[in-house]
Image 1 (cartoon, rainbow, N blue to C red):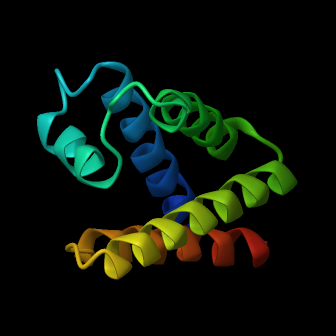
Image 2 (image 1 turned 30 degrees about the horizontal axis):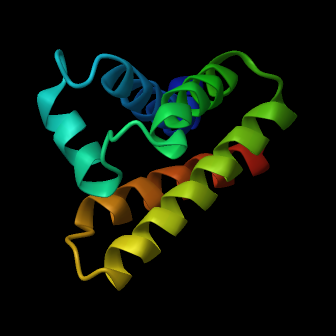
Length: 117
């Protein structure tokens, strides 16, 4: 298997997380569909959680791109934890959660890939 395919889950996860950060920072001006997905999960109401989310996403995304193997694994694990918690909250609230399942699968694939190195 080529090196590019081996690192694909990690780079895809980094892209999704950085897209989330960018979308929150710009309030969806350039990414309206992604921002609508974020608003569905956590409204951008000025709360601490809504404010901190973009900074945490940026930190996790940059760590996935430029961190050491251990830091990448930590970032992917944190993403898996947050995505799984989001999936559980969406399911419990009776909201649509199909996209959340895809995020959990992507984060799990990145964790598995980083563990197999």
